[in-house]
Length: 444
Image 1 (spheres, rainbow, N blue to C red):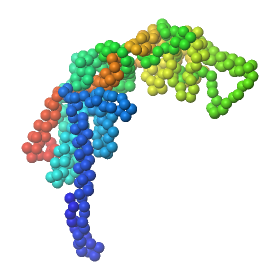
Image 2 (tube, rainbow, N blue to C red; image 1 turned 30 degrees about the vertical axis):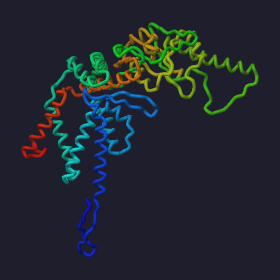
Image 3 (cartoon, rainbow, N blue to C red; image 1 turned 135 degrees about the vertical axis):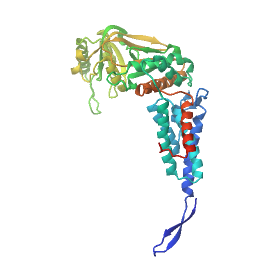
Image 4 (cartoon, one colour; image 1 turned 180 degrees about the vertical axis):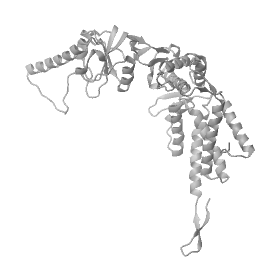
């Protein structure tokens, strides 16, 4: 509030100086109001009876969800304090995976109480320190309430995963998705690190067609691409030897932009002949190792494969999967227990992965390539999610991600706390007892 402040004068006397604090208060209240507005925006989507939100993105896409992180991520928030709540929801999504709406609603409720305390003249630093002490006490209360759970208790894990799915759009499929999430996480646990789970080892692949009931976990590898059909290439290979390449099976290009004008037909034939010989030489080296399935990484410099190279690969009876994304290379190499090959000179049999069967399978309106019976398979798993339309498919993927994160949290810290508001009431009772006892939170 504006007022006069007494400060020492230059001549040893005291003078009055006018200090305007109203602007500071206005900014603080504006920040609190912005945070409360963000919390109010997602409050109605909290819990099993929460309502779904229909969002329209800038490019015209429509999203139907009640996931707090997704709603806030699609909101164009400009106010800095409101952005902090959006980042809070993102952090919760990364660390815990679920509870993204709850943390924002709780933060909004705390801001509302802070506004009352500020109106009573309590200093912001005192409020901040008190909230920090309260959070530490709340953790102690929740730890005391927690019940140990073992990973061998599959029913308890499934119930925990189902809890996170019961408030989602696809809640009617929780009996299917919850066991899938539990089995997927348990499959990728490394005995050397039993308390750590990397969800990057669980690949969730979406495919339009069918219903969510058709969702399945595949013990193997799945590619969201169909095999190359150029020149009648194979679409089914048994006793597969799989090579993962990061080079191009196509004629090389110069490093600089230039044009070569050829006016003599004999020279043109010579160029085409050299291209054929170059590609044939590469394919002979690939075939000599026994490779009969080739995974080709997508290239941005030039075509990873050409029609001519696909023709020769088909003649060599090699199944080709094109346009493998760069970010999938690590997952594929870990699953197949093979090494990515960056140069044709390094293409050797010991770098290949092996599988009993690699085949193209029709799913819905498209096709996938599935590799099963992988020898010495790494600790990875793939979940193929299906849906009748894009809205249901996207929401099923988001819900499954939340369930996977819940099981991951139970692996990291093997305790369960009673649901609904039991834990919140327990913490509130502790704070009320402290308040009525006249002690502060730092007292034991």
